[in-house]
Image (cartoon, rainbow, N blue to C red; front, side, top):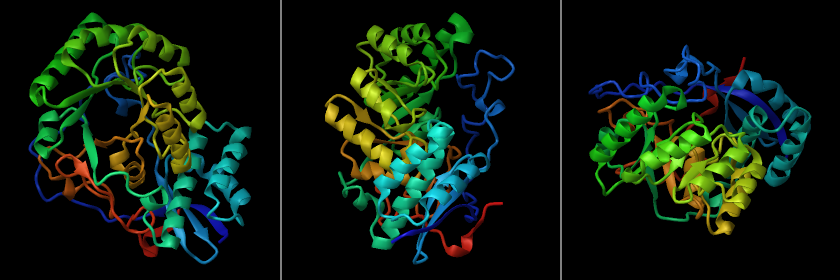
Length: 386
């Protein structure tokens, strides 16, 4: 079966309005979060002050028999020329030869850089190809990845409304760290108080993690980890900017006792292989929509599993249908991350995800079993991206 076309499309999903009123405003819209721009006071308080307002879309890969698959594309407008490049070079290729196609895209982007935005484009096409293959064969994507590795997936909740997440049935919680080096000793003290309060709320029988979102340097990471030692963090996450590879080695050497995690902003399988070889982290957190798609994720999972010492937890894997399917099929992925951005008090099933996407229940999740990734999209919902 040959590829007929690869194009950027808009998908008009139905608008979902929660029926249950929120009890209070959640943490996301207003809480301060440490971030890479924290050293600049005019944008420090919240990431929404500096993150781009890019529009998202989908990549549609259509086969010669009219079958099609979808993969998410963000940012859509800047990546449209790369998708057109792929269309010119991959149309006419065997749509089932996904490993070959992934390697071609990896090499096609060398002229303008594979890591970063080009990797987002590769991911979108790769996921669309897996979706297309599943739809043609009538198999859910997790079967194409090897079949279920477990009966259900353990989920942890990311966000700062831990009382609400506990009520929903989650038993592991990851906080977004509010302060960083720019806040000095006062910020360090407030971070400790913040984590201490969360530990008191969830109790000693539940797991607690801290996401530092590229906001720290080596010294601050070490000082905060030492100060938080009484609160038994399961891991500290993404404490350095992703390009600081020597810094990751230094943190590992200075914190041999602390479980470390990172990788959502690493791209292609090579960076992850470096991290495994140098044992700089204990848990890799590749994002299936950014790192190169499911084909790259397969390589990362295999390398992590073969190491015997490194795990893989997909960044935001519970919040997209692609991460759900891959995690379900991978023995290397013990947990599933669920960023709970829904209003406090509103049941998850009223506003979680897209049509066809499974919802966590009591801290566990099983993906849908529809062909491909099971996204419920009709042809009438798809239109060209202008």
